Every structure is written in C-alpha cells, then in structure tokens.
Image: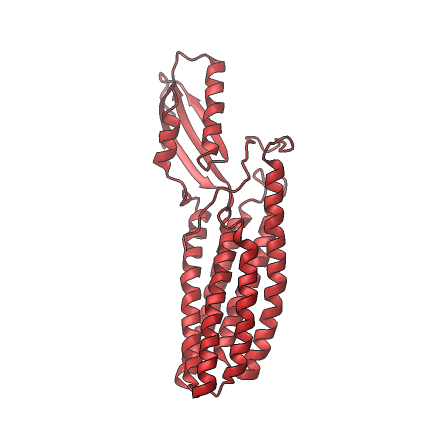
Length: 322
C-alpha cells in the first residue's frame, strides 16, 4: 500500500487566505467529488458499525477469537471512517485570521490518529490470540463461517463506495484498501470456520486471528509512515522536488531557482514556496505574467498553492538557508 498525497479535483488558485473560490471553473466539480466522498463515508460508517455489533455478539457467543479480532479490525475501520469524515468537514472550513489555511491539515492528523489506534488494537488482540493458540477453546465453526460471510458482502459493498475517489485522497484510499483487505480477512475466517466445523481443530481460530492481525499491521504500517511523513511537512510521495524545479527552469526568463520548499497542506492539496531570479531584461508586467504562467503550470504538477519570491541577480539572497 503506497498512499499518495494525491491530486484531487481541488485546484487552489488562491494565494491570499481571503480569496473567494466562487468563480473558480473547477468549483462545481470539487463540490461533487467532496459530496461523493461524504456519502461514501456516511454509508460506510452505518454499514460497518452495524456489522461490528453483530460480530462482537457472535464472537462472544461462539468463543471465536478470529471473529473478535475481525470485529476489532472493523471497529478500527468505523473509527477511521468517522475521523476521516470529520476531517473532510473541517477541511472545508473557511480560513480565519488565526487559521489562515483553515483546518486542511486535520485530514493528515486523522490518518495519523487512525494508524496509531489500529496499532494499539493489534497489540491487545495479538496478546489474546497467542494465548488462544496455545490454550484452544471450543469454537462453533459453522456460526463463525456464516457471520464472516456476511462480512465479505458488507466489506466489498463498502469498498465499492470509495472506488471512484480512491486515487484523489489519502483517507479515501486508506478506507478503500482497508475495506478490501477486510473482505479478504473475512474470507479467511469463513474458511477457518468451515474447517473447525468439520475437524474440531480449535487451535485454528487463534492461528487465523494472528494472520488477520498481521494483515492489518501491514496495511496500517504504510498508512502510519505516509501520514507521519505529511505531518512532518516532508515532500509528498507523489512529488519530486527536482522535477518541479525542472518545470520552473524550462520557462524562458528564469535564470535560477533556490530555497524551494514543498509540503502537504492536506491529504489532497500541496503547497510550494520558492525564490526565483528572473532576467533583468523583463519588465515588471512581464515578470508578473511569467509568475502567473509558472503557477498555472505547477497546478498540473500537483502544486495547488504556490508562493514565489522574486529576486534580482545583483542582490544576493539574504536568507540564511540559501
């Protein structure tokens, strides 16, 4: 799983926090994309929330650690969907004097919180699963298989809700991959339930539970590293600084570029600041036109919010980091 700080349909042309998006040509498309994501998250929360309750009741009734592990996994999904939905809502909040970027970064914090909560859940269920592997208890395999089969249908149905938007946002992609993984995990639990039903190999319940937890760990680890990267203002995976510098350098009139910083404002929007030395033969209006063209080109390279500082070749950059 390689989450991207993707290229959503939200092309942010605004360079001052008070700028209106109302007349933006992409505005309608942005709203529909957000609405699709919103509905997907709400349906996902309701469907999976109901299924967690069924799994917990069935898990205790059948004494199945595999079902309880899967319930813990699904509960993590419900929490993650709820956090992501909250982050989407907060990200749409208008900027203020105190929060000049709005609350866009909450989308990154939601992904990070998610990963941490799942890791804690894995630790708790892992301890009990290992215990159950060495001290097996009788398990009703038939019931386990039926409940897990319901899970396959619910997880695949929920995953389809996120399919359309999965490449545009880290949280949506996380939800999609999670639900797809859940369906595979449920399939494993179904097979284990059927085998237990006919062989009474009760140790298999603990073994499947451990496999389930390892699968969750793999998915969570990449979500954790990707969200941690973005939290630390690292350059998003989908962007290469040298490529972006090359794009700017290609413009006629650009003499040099330095002091470039690229970071994620949210799981869908990236920002850039850079210093440019432009040719002295250009007039002021020509320089402004060139900056405008560069910003437009950067939009096609995943940079939604660019701040460009112009410098003269005669005056060296005064910044200590130059």
